Length: 302
Ligand SMILES: Nc1ncnc2c1ncn2[C@@H]1O[C@H](COP(=O)(O)OP(=O)(O)OP(=O)(O)O)[C@@H](O)[C@H]1O
Ligand SMILES: [Mg+2]
Image (cartoon, rainbow, N blue to C red; front, side, top):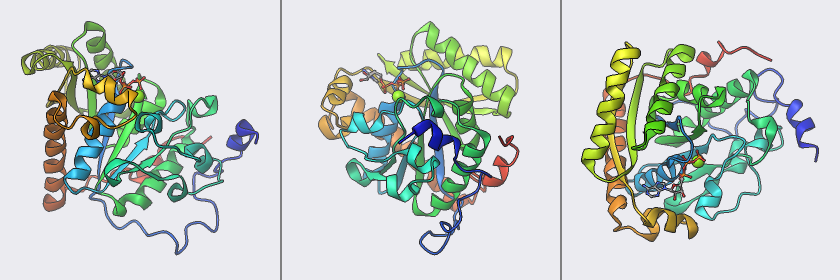
């Protein structure tokens, strides 16, 4: 298959191809799905591990979880979980498969939409592809309670786009100066490009709660000074834990391999926070459409 050629043919008008949007697919009726984009300025700070373990912990709380590997050209969630995916997002964007056809089931019953790996064409999604994906997530929304996006690192247009469409942006930082400056840069770009003003901070690789709070204090000090109007909420921390890389090597979620590990408790606490917030959304009826495709119309079509 000529992958690059197929991708070029994709989704001409940013709308679903004919004959697909019929009875087989449920109409989007719910806007109460909670979407959390997990992101970072610096790479390798633990986003994929957070997505996988937060997702798993949420399934234990009874939530219907959908994970989207939005690191579209370099996704690796399936490898991390030791599950194989015959098809991935590439096949959806090329029109060969539907979202439902590439969806695989991970531990705890969570569903995963795998990204393509090593496909240069996907490093920068076009405006049409972004609109198309927005519409697809709208359509899937009423089958899930939580959508977790693993955005990949940095300030690329894919990353800032996915963050701009999520209700919650969970920025991961670690206690290192480069991580702080990169987290700051990410929020600055997201603010300038997409008017994003609210972020949540999760400190990974923390040696203690105190160290995590110090990271938060330092970041807020910089934001208050240089990014007026931006709010950073403290969401919590994940302890540095040797059992995390061990579980990666075993290709399992940490909460499966080492449920009593010191960082497992941190993931459970994080899941409870996200769970409480999603409940607040449902009962309070906050209408903040996640992946609201009408918003996507403002993106230039190519
Ligand atoms: N709390 C932690 N304690 C110890 N090791 C960790 C912790 N969190 C993540 N790791 C390790 O850090 C490495 C990077 O983690 P991960 O792949 O989740 O990062 P990432 O932010 O998704 O990276 P990328 O930017 O490349 O997508 C992995 O080897 C993982 O095992
Ligand atoms: Mg990753």
